[in-house]
Length: 413
View 1 (tube, rainbow, N blue to C red):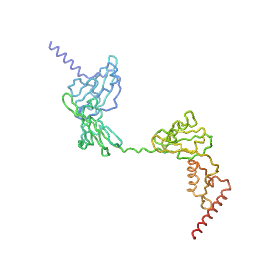
View 2: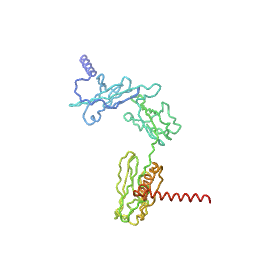
View 3: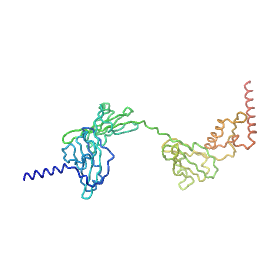
View 4: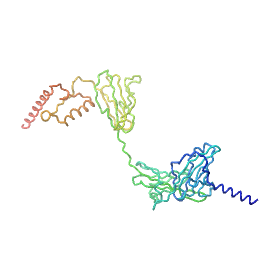
């Protein structure tokens, strides 16, 4: 009887150590993209990458080391063992690096996926391995909080107190710049000098033995980017001539690096209160935008279907919600003059024009005085009829000579 029992026990032990059958047909989901890192001597948990399927179906879970096809034991006293869907290394060693299959089975189906484990030694002279770092990039601010990442599977991070090092040296907690709360580190009076490598150490107890879980955080502080002011393209305090009873539409245009809200106002209130609620004579259109090579051009129209007497000499402002800069348009009646100003400028070298002077007179002045301010200009060489230019030029030149001679004579009195 004892002999039969020994033979049976030996048979069971032999089956436990046998490799998994290579002939089993299992749907292969490949390799999990995220590598699980650990430092030598630290605990490492690897959750089955098929966990979402496991929770929805009646599957059993098996872990297998890929290079040996040996089943991972479920004995919780073993250094490497499986605890249902979790593969545990308590603690991890260099030889544990490799690929591990999580296999799900039921009576009709089998599916598997591989997780990669990488166990590293510390870099020479350091308390961490730089390849396992987490990257935190923040812009400059008065204070900031760094959180020790990926701990929830091991400990309750709200009931665990972490220790923090910078460049492997303990932080000066007496400076009161550092505040440690559970697994978070708050740095006050932040400066560029706070950039560096921070290591958090979290105590972890398993089977009565205390281990440290560490996380390396490369913390970088960037300068706060300048937020450019919006540029008002139109209006720019324009005076516009419009006939009584005519309709007119003007568009507020603002260039910015993002989409912004624009609105028209009169006397500090929305333009929609400018007229009676039942009067739709003045209408503010919807906000729109278009992308340009210089940024986003935001726009919103203001439409007067009929200009009445009270609309003249009032200032209608275009506003944006991201800036206090405002500009206006104002209406005036046409005053009957053909032109507001006559402009003549000298020609050089027997009638050939100066390029810089042409640009100023024929482009810059009309852009500002005519398009933006609403003035009418008569410019010699642009608005005179063929043949008139030389006579007008001679007349103004004669006037200039007389004026200069008078000034010269006055110098002797």
